[in-house]
Amino acid sequence: MTRYLIPDACIRDIGEYEKTGGYQGLEKALSMEPGQVVEEVKKSGLRGRGGAGFPTGMKWMFAAGDPKFPKYIVCNADEGEPGTFKDKALLKNNPHILIEGMAIAAHALKAETGYVYLRAEYPKEKEILEAALAQAHEKGFLGENIMGSGARLDIQVHRGAGAYICGEETALIDSLEGKRGQPRLKPPFPVNAGLWGKPTVVNNVETFANLPFIMRAGAQEYMKIGAPDCPGNKLFSVSGHVEKPGVYELPMGITLKDIIYDHAGGIKNGKALKAVIPGGVSAPVLPPDKIDCPMDFVSVQKWGSMLGSGGVIVFDEDTCMVQVAHRALQFFEHESCGKCTPCREGTGWLRAILERLETRQGREGDIRLLEDVSRNIAGNTFCPLGDGAAMVVLGFLKHFKEEFSEHIENGCPYGRTGKRPDRPAPVQ
Amino acid sequence: MKSEKSQREKTFSPGALTRLEEIKKKYPDKRAALMPALYIAQDEFGWLRPEALKAVAQYLELPEMTVRSTATFYSIYKHEQAGRNMVRLCTNVSCMVLGASTLKGTLKTLYGLAPGGTSPDGRFQLEIGECIGACDRGPAMLVNDDLHTELDTKKLIQVLESYK
Ligand SMILES: Cc1cc2nc3c(=O)[nH]c(=O)nc-3n(C[C@H](O)[C@H](O)[C@H](O)COP(=O)(O)O)c2cc1C
Ligand code: FES
Image (cartoon, rainbow over all chains, first blue to last red; front, side, top):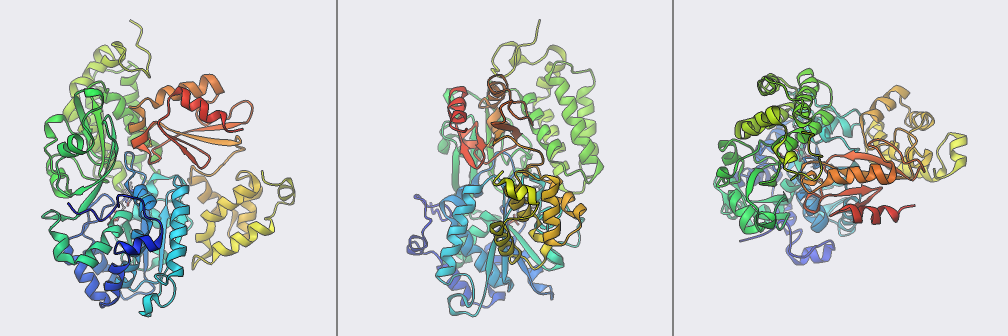
C-alpha cells in the first residue's frame, strides 16, 4: 500500500522533505500551463476532504473561469468537527506537503495570495507551519519568481478564535475579513465571490496534501488507489473505545470493520462493539451490523450516514447512547451561530429534551417530539450545521429507539447498574 | 497583564505597534487585521477590556461597535478579567466516553472551578470546551497554549500544580 500523506517519521525540515520527492510535484506543475494543472486534477477524481467530498477539479474550474482578479486560495485548517484530528497530524508531521499543495493550487488558479485559516486550539502547529513557510520562502518555493517560473505566492496564517461554524467556508471567509463568522447565503459561491468579493478557492488541509502526489505520479496512477468514484488515500481519525486510537492513512473504500479491528486494534479491553460514528460527531451513528460499510463519500451515504471528516468514534457495549446524543446536541446548540431560527431554536429544543431523558424527567411523547423537531430543522437551515444536528438525533432514534424509551420509562439503564462512573445512580 | 503602564495610558506599547504594523501588511483590507489585532490587544491589556477594544478601533480606524461585534462572536478571546491560567477541558464525545465528566467534578471540588468561572485565588479560569483535536489521547485539556492528554484525576492535579 502506498502512503503519501503522512510519513513514518515526522518531516519538518525542508531538506528532508525534498529528499523524499518533496516539491517535485510543484516543479512538475510549474512546467505545465495553469489550465493543464486544473485538467489533471479534474482527471484525478480528487474529492475535497473537508467533509462534503466536492470534486476539487470542478471547484477549481469554476474559479479559474471567473474573469475577476486577484484570485485567492484559502486552506481550511479550522478542524472543529469533534472526533477529528487528522489535519493536525498533517500539520505536525508533514507541514511542507500543505505548502507544496497550496503552491500547486495557486499556480493552477493564478493566485498570488493564500491564507491558512488555522484553528486557535492549535498554537503549536501554528509555530511548526510558520517555520516551514519561512524555509519554503528561503528556498524559493514561495515568494517572488518561484523556481524561476515567474510565478509568485505569499501564504499567511490566520488564527481563528474558537468558533466551530468558521469551518463552514463562507463563515470562514467572513471571519477572515474580520467579521462575525456567520455563513453567507449561496449563491454566489466563493469560487465567484469569496474573499473581498473575489474568486476564492477554499480547500481542506488534506485536500491540498493530495496534490503533490497527483502531480508527481499523474492522475492515472492516483486513480489506481482507493475506491473507483473516490480515489486516493484518506486519513481516518480513530478515537473512543479502541485499543489503538490514532490517525490512519488508508485507501478510500476500506471497510469500517477493517479500520476498527485490523488497524485500530479492536474494541478496548475485549468488550463488544455497540455503535460507531463514522465521520465526526455530525455524522449519524451506525450499529454493529453496518460495519461492513466501505468508507468513501458515496458508500457511507448509501449505508445511512456520511464520511464527513473521517472521524471514526467507537463506542463499546457500556456506552449510553442518550448520553452521547445529549453531549452532541450540547455541542450543536453551543456552536449554532444564531443566524437562522430553525437551527438556533431547534438545537436548543433537542438538547433540552435529551437533557430531560438524561435526568430522568423524560415524558411520554418525548421521542415523537425529538423526531418532530428534527424533521422541522432538516432542510430548513441556512447551512448544514442544523441539518447535521437533526440527522444525528434521527440516527440515534433509528438504531437505538428502545434505549431512549427505556430512559423515559425507567431511567438510564447504565446509571442504574452503576456502569457509568460519571453520573450518580438515580435514587430508587 | 503585561504592564500596568500600558493599561493606564490606554494605548499600545511600541512592541505591540510593530506587531500590528506587520499584521496589517498581510491583508489588502485593514478590517481583516481585526482578529489578530484583538489577540495583541488582549496580550497588552490582559483581557478585552473596553479600553482594549477602543485602542483596536482607533488603530484600525474602525467604529468601536464593529470591533465589539466581531470580538463578542468568538469564544477564545478573554472577554472578562480572567484567571491567570486558562484551562480548557474537553468534554466532547470522545473525551466524555473516556471519563472527562469525572474530571469536571474534580475541578469543582478541588479548585472551586465551575464552568466559566475563576478559582477563588485567581489562579485558574475554566472553560468547558469542545473538541481540541486530541481525541485519540483523551481526556484532553489545554492550559493556556499547552496540551495535556490522557488525563485522570491524579494526572489532572499533577498538571495543574505546575501552573502558578
Ligand atoms: C458547520 C460546518 C463546519 C465545517 N467545518 C469544516 C472544517 O473544520 N474543516 C474543513 O475543511 N471543512 C469544514 N467544513 C466544510 C467547508 O464548508 C468546505 O466545504 C470545505 O472546506 C471545502 O474544502 P474541500 O473541498 O477541500 O473539502 C464545514 C462545513 C460546515 C457546514
Ligand atoms: S473529543 Fe476531546 S479532544 Fe476531541
